[in-house]
Amino acid sequence: MGESAPLREPTFLMLAALGPGPLHGYGIIKAVAEMSEGRVKLRAGTLYGALERLEAQGYVVFDGERAEGGPPRRYYRLSDDGRALLRDEAERLAANARVAFTRLGVRPT
Amino acid sequence: MTLHGCAVRWVVGRFVGVDVSYRDEVAATALESTADAGRWDRLAEVSALVGLALRLRWRHRTAGREDRTWRQGLCLGALSVPVVFGVGQVSGAGGVLLGIAAPALLLVLGRFDPRLAAAALVVWFWRLVVGDLGGLATALATPAEDGRVALLARWFLMASGVGVAWVVTRRSIRRLNAI
Image (tube, rainbow over all chains, first blue to last red; front, side):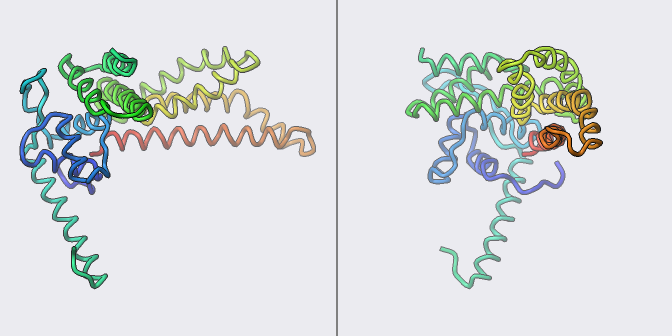
């Protein structure tokens, strides 16, 4: 996959939503809204555009269709590369946050 | 089915390079996520789906490649020139609409399908070369001529349009390929 630029926040949150396991599109939208406390609101058009890119680059994999008490839904999961990308990005953000807190002379809340 | 539901179904029906279950999934997600939303949120959702439809079409036709995007966009622009300028000869609102607003719309939609921005570039470039370049030389040669400022401003706007279309095309290709 090679070196990647910092992820955009919606992309980062989408990957994080898939961290625990496969989800369908609406599940991802709900998880992202919950993680960001309603700050990031994904639209279906934006979500599937991002999923299409992530799938094309091998970070997200189509995990099949499943019907759980309703019409069949398409599930997506993180690939090993996607998991590694998310971990690397989380470490980069955490390192930046540590530096910022240090320079401000405050403890993280 | 509501008007919003019809609009969503119509837009996802325009998706290319995907199967029926993908269209159904996107429509279901769009309808679920806007179930309790207001009118403007629903309109924004449909707009985002139009963006996705354009993006899928671009990806399907070019595989996200820059060379194919430029080639197809320039061809589309070349085909659009006779239409835009044919109707552009007509005076009044129709002429203005197709001569200026149509390329501007192509530029906006070019954020999702960069071939459209490349097509706008051709249209404005053609307009610049055929319509304004000769006039520019005349205006520069006759400094006291009435309407010189207007002609220079018009030339500047057209040249800016070409530059902006080039930038939008390149940036859109990069953005649509980025994660």
